[in-house]
Image (tube, rainbow, N blue to C red; front, side, top):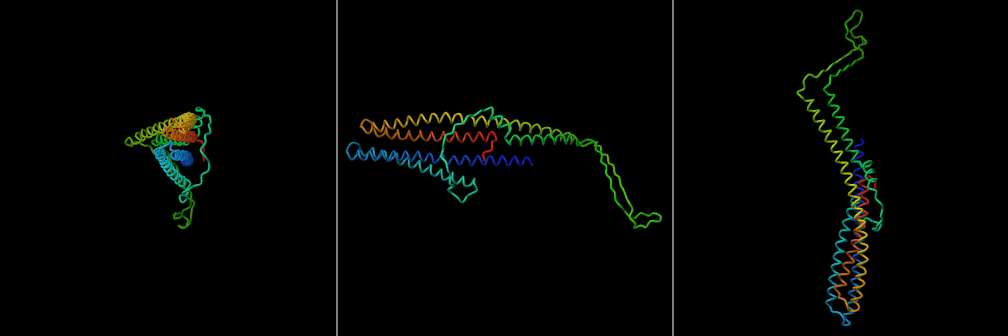
Amino acid sequence: MQTAQDNILVARRDLAFNAAQTYYNILFMRESIRVQDEQIASLVAHRNEMEKRVEAGVSTKFDVTTTDVRITQAQNTKLDLQNQLRNQQVQLARLLHKPQQADIPVKGRLSYDQQPVNLEAELTKAAANRPEVKLAKDAEATADLQAKLIDKSNLPSLGVGAQVGSKNGYILPNVAITDMRFNTVGVAQLSVPIYDGGKNRKQRLEAAASYRASQARTADTQEQIRADVRQAANNIEFSQARYNNALQQVAQATDALTRAQGRYRYGVGQNLDVLDAETQLAQARLARAQAMYNYTLGQYQLKRATGEQIW
């Protein structure tokens, strides 16, 4: 009974994690689409400014065409992201058992909420809470009991029994054959195994091997759980570093774009410099969103690794 409950707990945990992952996939896709919208809007504004410069004879039509190419590329990227977003919404509908509802309303926005991680405390929590450990130990206990049962199966056994009732059919003086008389029966049986062709010895060897295998599986499960916790903690640590780098990258790319636009506006820079700066800023913003997503998902990975309930 307890094993079945632990299996249900594992299934619930995995489903809850899949739902959380899909939810944050949706938020990440939305954030990525917002980044593309900002890039497209900035490129369109730059294109409009160039058209005025072309009309004034300051720039050439080639610059406008080059910018149109970048706008189209950004729009294609946005279409890909919208397709991925829709697929994630379908996946979330399946997990929520609403297959007919293609567009599940999802609230929230991707954010960065830094939290400290105590690795030793998380390892202790995982060892105590993970249902896989309980399942492995249950299997080990079952194998141990099976081995003990086989050890005793070849011992002599004594069985006793008794019956109490009434019976007719006795032929006795002054007693009718149909009269019911009180009746008791006692039975004793002694079984002593003499020869089983080595069956019990082979069963003991097999049971001992099964018990050792269950012990090895328990140890492997514990090692895997510790590895899960360490990997989740590593993901969180490096996601923090990537997020901090992405913030610097966004600031640097924003400054580079401002300078490139100013240089182009005053005729000392090229249109390609502005377009490259736009692309770099969009990439920096996407890197920031990716780091936020990885960090948040890493927190859920750590919760799953430690056996914490997330539903």
